[in-house]
Image (cartoon, rainbow, N blue to C red; front, side, top):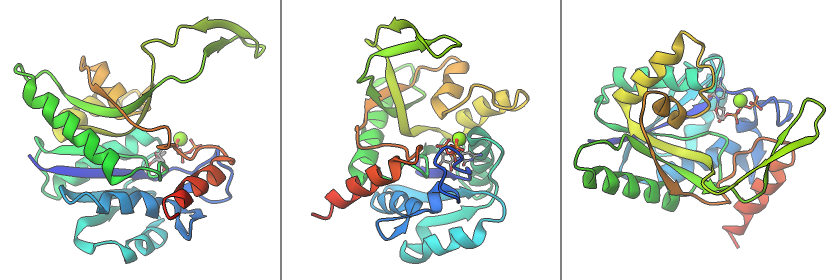
Length: 243
Ligand code: CTP
Ligand code: MG
């Protein structure tokens, strides 16, 4: 089975408040998502990377491909109203383009621009090794994640801490998340009628149909640019690579 990548790149970045979708905000001399794509360009065993953009963002997105190997990347302007819908539409496009349902797909947030080839390879190796060791074929896939570093609180309606949850056994999901295309597409299809409610990553869709994806330790540097202050953090982390 081959490996493909799918990059949901169709969000509006409302929490980042950059005045434009955060994935196109310049950082380290290039649009933010360019750094994301450059990491995937450094993993030759990924057959093709499909970038899912919002309809109408084609011009912005086309400029991204300038400095990347042309045959390894493609654009699809089939972004939806939610991340899950963008991924669902992108998976259909991958299948239309000739990917097999049994092929693997790595779904990765455009906004997670600190991803590295080493982390991508760590996920692929862990997933393929665990899948081949799993005699009954029960392992559906894997995701990068980090053990929770901080104390976890629940808040009441007044914004006061109401309880403290044990952090043992709790993880923060990152991306990439790696599954076979057909089962992931089916798991998302099952949630389409409810508007993908509660589906904020690929693993949550797979868990909803009974799968137990493997958690693979990611990196505290693999942040998703989400808040205004994250741009400076991401820029500083990118900068350390060139020192
Ligand atoms: N995404 C997408 N389609 C959507 C919403 C999000 O492809 N309808 C993508 C974003 O572009 C991003 C990734 O999913 O790369 C993670 O989503 P998030 O961090 O929530 O980005 P936004 O939705 O753009 O930001 P916000 O939620 O603050 O508006
Ligand atoms: Mg969002």
